[in-house]
Length: 260
Ligand code: COA
Image 1: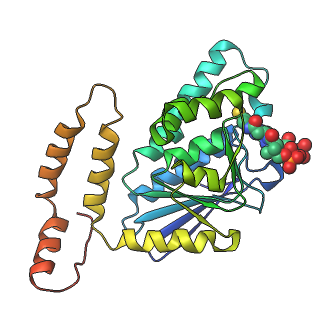
Image 2: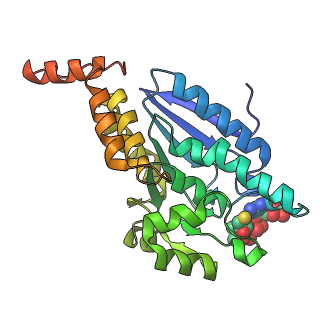
């Protein structure tokens, strides 16, 4: 597929996706969401891709939200469909990907932009980042999982304040409340994310996928996370990676994982 709005690069088992609509501050329109879905689904099947970094092009924005121009005239039914389709094709999809995704937040992460970062497994912000869910200032609410993931990450009280005030917070505040794991200088952001990715890719891809699945179980309705952990833990014993990991430890050498 030829992408209009995203760029993809691959180096040493790490793929980087750049959302590339800088003149619209990388706002997520329908085409971009479809392209991201396609890119994530393809990269997940590439055995050599063991971590993915996602960022925005330009110096100003990660993503400044869903594309407001696209939904300004929507009806109730279209609004429901926009939210449901977006959640399924991108936000829940990323959260449940077998390959870890690191959000490199290089500026504004607003609305759908912050929701995308929150669906990623790890978040790093540059010190000029500004994050918020300003939807109520437009007469709507976050619809790409923001009302659920923000309280999960920073607690209900702080999340409600951010959502109801529509205010942006700085990278420093985001770090303080646990919304981002690290802050870097803007020109060090991608390298820093790359360093995290390099630590991840040394480990068993099969176990990593199982760990993501088990951690997410805590947030899936009607699922007992402890039960999911038991099953996932057990499944690891049937993988080639487990045999290799334990054998390599006992033989005092580095494991060579295949993800099988
Ligand atoms: N959807 C569609 N277009 C957007 C957008 C969005 N979410 N965010 C920014 N843009 C567009 C602007 O319309 C403008 O396009 P134009 O040059 O064709 O007029 C361009 O990106 C640059 O944005 P601009 O507003 O001129 O930049 P700024 O530096 O003055 O302000 C922001 C930056 C992020 C504060 C401002 O763009 C903004 O508030 N964006 C909307 C944020 C939002 O509400 N997101 C949630 C959506 S649900």
